[in-house]
Image (tube, rainbow, N blue to C red; front, side, top):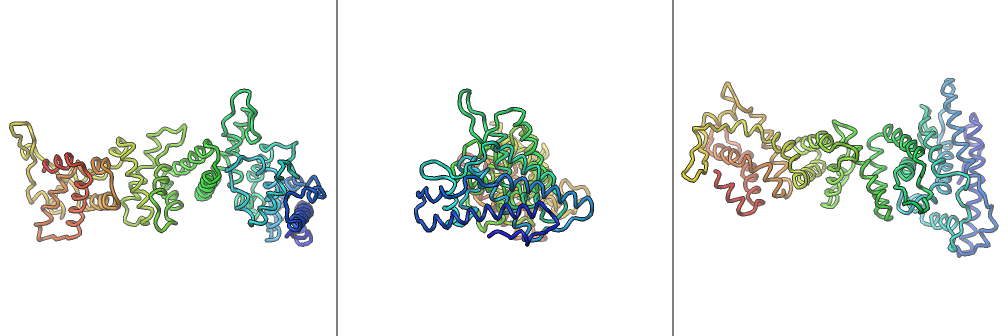
Length: 483
C-alpha cells in the first residue's frame, strides 16, 4: 500500500513528487495483480494488454536523487528535517520498484537476492508474470535508453552523497539494498569479457575505462561499509549464488572480497569474521567449518600470500589459545589451523608451532653432557634433574621459562590438540618436536608432591596419547624411542 502524498513531509518538494509517482506505479501494479488473480491464468495476455506500456520508473530514480540533494542543502543551512517513518517507507518502495524493473531483469540467474526472497510467494509469482510472460515477451522492459551501469552509478552516487539526516536516501540504500549495489558493481566491473565475436551480456561493461571507473565506485562503497555489513552482504550473495547456480567467476570474486574483509582489519578481522560466520551457530557443521577455513586461508588476488598470512594466522592463534574466546569461535579457529597445517606446513611451523612451544623448548635445556650416543650413532636424551624442573615454581633466580609461559603453552596445546580430531601433519609439526619435554614434564608432575596438579597431569597425558594415536605406527614408535 502506497503512502498518500499528503502524509509525507511537505518541506521537500521532491519527496511529495516521489510519493505521487509512486502512488501511480503501485496503483497500476495493484490493478494488474487483481486482474491476474481474478483471471487465474497468467497466460491471459489480453489482461496485460489493457495496462500501460510504460511506467515512470526512471522518474522515481530522478526524484530519489533530487530528494538527497534537498536533504544536503537543508543540512548545510541547518534546516534539515528528520525523515519520518512514512517518508522512509516511500523511499524504500521507490528503490524497490527501480530495482525490480530496471536492475533485476538485467542480472543473470543466481546473482543477488532473488525475487522470491523480497516479496510474499503470491506477490512474487504475480511480479514474475508481469515481467516475464510465457511466450518470452515482457510487459515492461527495462528502459532501452538507460544501461545498467548508468542506473547503478546513479544509485552509488546517492550513497556517496550521504548526509547526516536520519534515514536519508543514502541510509535507506545502504541499510536495505547494500547487497544489490555490491552485486551489480561486481557484475559490471569484474565479469570476464567474452571472446571476440561473442555478444557482450547486458550486465557486463565492455569499455575498459568505464570498468576502471566502476571498480573505483565499488572500492569507495566497500571501504566505507562496516565489516559486519560487508560480511552479511557477501555471504548472502554467496549463498544465493550457490542456490541459483550463478556464474563460477561471480562466486570466486565474492569469496575474494570476503577474504579482503578479513585482511582489511589487521587486529581483529578474523574475530569479526568468525563472530559473524560461526558464533551464531549452536554447532557448526564440518562442512561449514571447512568453508570458513577455506575463506580465511585464501589470500585475495593481487595480495602477497606471506603478508596475508602474517596478518591472519597470528589472529587465529590468539583466538584458538585464549581462554575467553567464545567456544564456537575457538572451534572454527582451531579447525582453520588444522587446515593450515595440511595445506601450508611451512607457514604453520613458523607462525604456530614455533611460537606456541618455544617456552617449552627453552625450559627443556639439554646440555651436551646430558646426551649419549651408542655405536650406531643414535642419540639418547637423559632425564632432567629436579632442580631444573623447579623453574615451574619460579624458585630459581635465573629462569629459562616462566611458569606463566609454560602454562600458556599447555593451555594452547589443550585447546588445539584436544579440541577435536587433529591431523597427522598437525601433531607432527606441533607436538612431536616437544614430545620428549612433555613426557618429562608429565613424569616430574606425577612425582612432585609439593605441587600436585591433577589437571596439568591429565592435560599432558591426553596430549601425549592423542598425538601417538594420530601418528602412523612407525612414526609413533620412533617418537617413543626418542624418550
